[in-house]
Image (tube, rainbow over all chains, first blue to last red):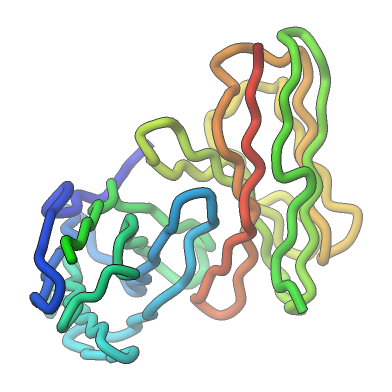
Length: 112
Length: 110
């Protein structure tokens, strides 16, 4: 099955640093979702994006819908230890398909 | 006030057995999904139902059979379990373009 490319695959950062990750596709999407998954838990929806160029924040998290509609970006500012986890992007090609394609995940580890 | 719930949380069984996983959502969503997450954490869609109608059926062995008795429930039955079926199975539901996941069922086949 198709998966979206996420970069970086994993990263170690110091507490207090800002984090950036992205998700790219060869296809155009009309919806981008960003999730965080903690160990032993289900993915939790962080941010949803619906329009090209859209910039949406949720606390220290900011996500953007790329203007080409083939990519999306997630930034975490001033990281804290509880930001540790796997971050997934998910894209939906059109609202009528119901199908979401997931990224390969970015594993974030924060060093206190 | 759980949104999407799954039972059981853990399931350990032997090869060849038949097992079911249940999912319920109290969000009033029309669409529900089953995903499989492998050991590398890749999430792959298996099935989706919209208002009890099967709308997505990915390339999944026919030993896997979903059933949706009503739009709040989507169950997954697996026949003749194999070692390769070991994974975490997630139920999800969606409204508009937002999708919400359950806590997962970790299936271990020995």
